[in-house]
Length: 285
Ligand code: DHB
Ligand code: FE
Image (tube, rainbow, N blue to C red; front, side, top):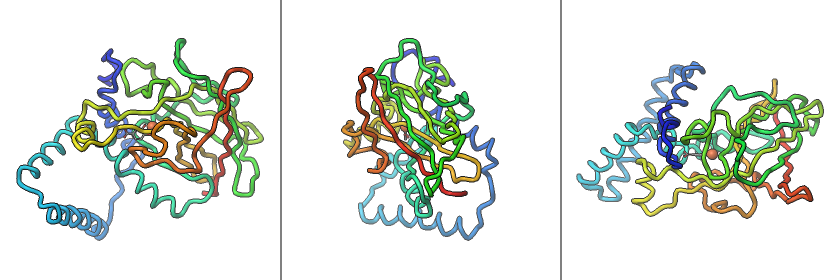
């Protein structure tokens, strides 16, 4: 990834890196299944009709149309489509998926997952740099089924931004795999993960997504969060995030991906570290 060669402490290039990772994930999941012509017709027509309606309602002019065309080209050339779509669209796709889900509520995956991380038995410490900044966070709990029985050996594939809001594998200068791992729960479904508390995340301001946000006078922030896939054989995989009570942007997430059920309230222990517990509930596949 070219972005990791840059030394500036910005997230420039994160969007383009997300495009490379997304393409690789498509290649490995055989995701090109044919979509029926009727479905393409139905959805593509509805999208175009919605766009036509906006043009009429808002009296969109030729100069505005050409500016939009330029911006759409820039998003593609800058590799920011995964970033843009995951911030502004994914939450509604997740809302539709959630209609048929039980157990722990989900939320968006976002563009910064990297597969095939180290597997660590619980209790585990996520990989950190020697000088990793931020408060130590001890995150523990249980994985149970809908009846409350433990799911032995459940996997918690966890990834999150660092104490400055940057993700390894995307922002420059952070070692691969930093603050990422697949933690395996014990026979009682218990897990304990030691990491550092993440900071809020800012959409890179230099790219076309950031420029749109600035031009519209919006803000580019997501509240601090942990990302997780929680899974076990025979159960439906949960894609979710956990947030922090009282954190900045919790009530004004640019990605609209917070839910009240997903907020942790860590407490500082006598050991000086932050502690928080959460139980995940898996439904059968
Ligand atoms: C984006 C970044 C995130 O960290 C996240 O959780 C969701 C979306 C984004 O920039 O698209
Ligand atoms: Fe994120």
